[in-house]
Image (tube, rainbow over all chains, first blue to last red; front, side):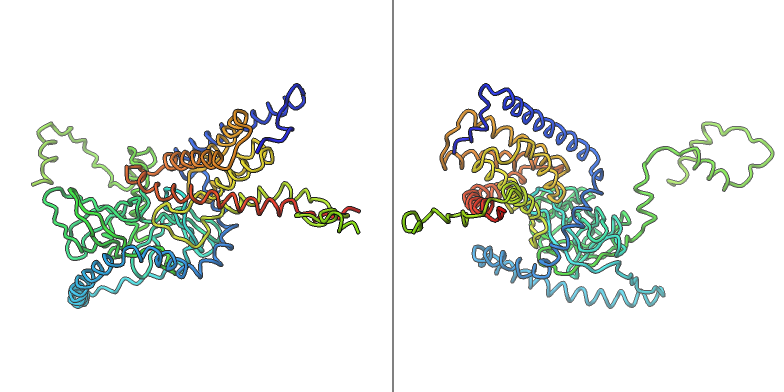
Length: 330
Length: 185
């Protein structure tokens, strides 16, 4: 379709000026966009307030649909299911066989655990969940994997809290609004979770991959001890996630670890639980900048030290320093 | 009597011609509203494991721009891109930049090819959608590897195939836009 005559400026000064101003404004918009982009790439949390305001406003719309989401995901699954029914069936049978063994193992472990805890006199670590909410939607257009949660500051949700479902870990809270919040899913490429094998202490990092699976990177190098069907749980290191939450199952081995399938598929979870941060103190310590001691902290430490003896001692010689330095290793 | 002579004398596609006129709120509001509503796709109850849903707001923008040149001002990329960025999960500014550049590019393209057909529009839209998805992925701040670009292929294919349907939706909305609902007193 041809542009309307008004688009063509011809010799009309006024129209020419209008076209020029239009280009000027559009270029200014593009430049402003580039500027915003640079700022938000350098500081991803920069516009969190604006974003959470938008999600607060729109989440009420999304929440209405969230109740029916399990049905919707089944609709998509149903279409996909026709294409991979056979292989999926075989895969599931294999998984059931593995799961039976695992179940027996888990029962034995549970029993042993109870006994050991009784011996130590430990109470079961029962934590009250912060909130129980629905996952409203996700960034299904973008390459990033965020989900929107129907609980926010009003429900006590804070940044960094882990989000779990009965099947396992889902992600962690990234930005909090008044009535909604944004969750970084485990499958986002920026998400890293410290995990360990459920049966022993093989530790690894679970990184998100673009296609909805996780990549397990073993921390200790050497012969890859993983096998297909191994289940990984959170290790608790880092202090954010409570240890022992199921994360993923190995589906494919590679050089330095494995590719694993997420155990709690967010699309199939209806209601999720927001848990408190496991070790807030440890997390705070990790998040503080690893800079040298500040003047204030030196004073604090100095105040806690016992008074130095009045007699001045000679400075330690180099041999003294060496023996002191090597003594903890021996 | 008049009706027998000319059936469109009193009514046409957009309603009664007598004592009714187009409403400015509809004429200018419907395109903006439809693009903003398409930006709310992340609030749909779909939790996708990978990028699968076509960039609907961008496709509606293309549809309106190609079907009704001059209806959206050249600076519309800034506000529409900003609204899209607030929910899309992209870093704020990526859609602002890409929407603005798209509108400028389409305006320049139109100077060169003022008369176009369906196929030309589809090819132009396909090229722009491809560029939009590629640049969105590159500007998303995710750690990119080859797998990301392979995963864009299904989304891209779906988007290109969906574009004529989006154009169909835009024509239906265009009819709604031009309904004569305002009473002339």
